[in-house]
Amino acid sequence: MSGLLVADVSKPEDIGSAVSKGKIGEDTLDVTFANDLVYLADGQLGIKIVNFPQPLAPNLVGQLALPGSARGIAVVGSNLFAATGDGGFWIVNIANPVSPAILGGYKAPGGEARQVSILLTNSAADTNPAIDRYAADWGEPPTRLYALLAYGLGGVHILDVTNPVNPQVVGVFQSGGAGEDVWVQRNRAYLANSNG
Image (cartoon, rainbow, N blue to C red; front, side, top):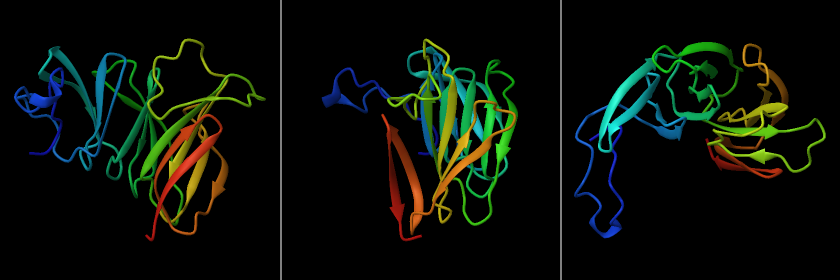
């Protein structure tokens, strides 16, 4: 079965006895939770936004097709960040989950956006930034937002996404392989790197 599955894990030894019945998504590659909603990277179908009027009954609220194939997502506040393979990287306004809208994007030659993590800093000189791929519901608005993209053979691309309409490249690291996934914690980025 493909798509989004939801299981009740209140009794871990009995997982599978209570699994969602509704089918949402076809080729779901990533999922995150923020703003009391679930967001899916659903391959060629783009992104999907889901709520749960009942615990195991998912309900499709909104969706948006994106160039490429949605494979990795992160949410910060009212913005969703999507890595879409050879389609690049897209920033989507999700303030109205029924009608998500593209704000800005980025595509570089020589790779494909495979995963995204978000770096939040509260000052230009912040030496201990709050960093989390699943960084939603932050109290203070950050001073700067950066997207770290695992960009396949293009390594890791770092973009300033503080202005989501106009993301700016601030750094590129060639990893000597293919960047598959990136995770950030404190002031470190961890890259899953393959042979290509």
